[in-house]
Amino acid sequence: MIIKRGIVVSHAGALEWGAGKILEVTALKATIQFSDGVVRKIASSHFTTLQAVDASSYVPLLDKIPAEKAKSAPRKPRKLKQPTA
Image 1 (spheres, rainbow, N blue to C red):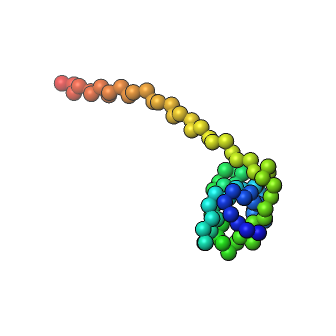
Image 2 (cartoon, rainbow, N blue to C red; image 1 turned 45 degrees about the vertical axis):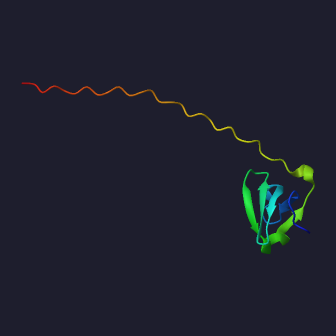
Image 3 (cartoon, one colour; image 1 turned 90 degrees about the vertical axis):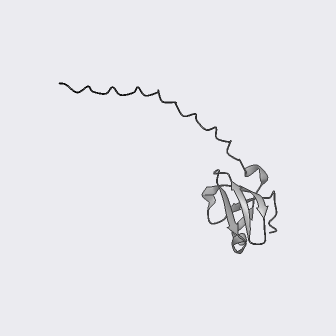
């Protein structure tokens, strides 16, 4: 199989990752966005573990919207104890 950008593949050794879309290919590795939401880099020596799959099997996760952190209430300054005489 020819590994090139845009092809949808699955990794034979890690089917739990789901299908992945190849984002970039170099002489040493391929960068793949898998359906589980993780971008992984696969070494060219492991290209034989990649299998072409139907493009409709790739379902990218929707971009997660970061939750806004609740703002803490401003702290009241501590009252200093007056020494008793």
